[in-house]
Image 1 (cartoon, rainbow, N blue to C red):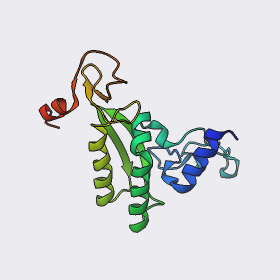
Image 2 (spheres, rainbow, N blue to C red):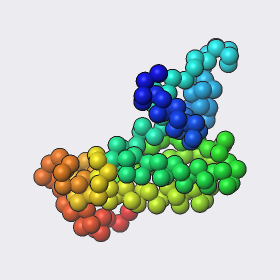
Image 3 (cartoon, rainbow, N blue to C red):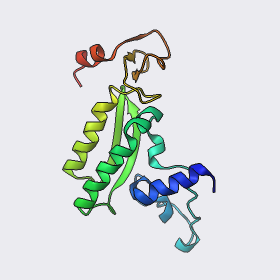
Length: 163
């Protein structure tokens, strides 16, 4: 097993909600993900090629991905809902993190909300503090990573937005 797969296995051992799952059935890939046509004992072993956290932008993952997972794990364990919790989608939309899930708690949603807010001010590429927001595809960047000149200061952009 290569280094990335070993790292992913360790992540999934610590945070079982990072094992990819079918968003409709809720079954994890290790359970056939809800569409395995054969017998359950014939489900191929998961090779840890990727985790749900791989869907998060690299800069955000570097800056706070593990912190978010740590806080969420603590909350899910406290509420005794870890086995029921599933991530359905992680992405960037309109310049900040979107984290969709099932089986979360009210406090768990506040944890995610905190990091969604933080993502608005964190470079999507490297994880340093964002200085600009691009205006074509809305994304926060630091000065070094900003890909084009169609941008505005990050504080100014978010102060004028209503969402």
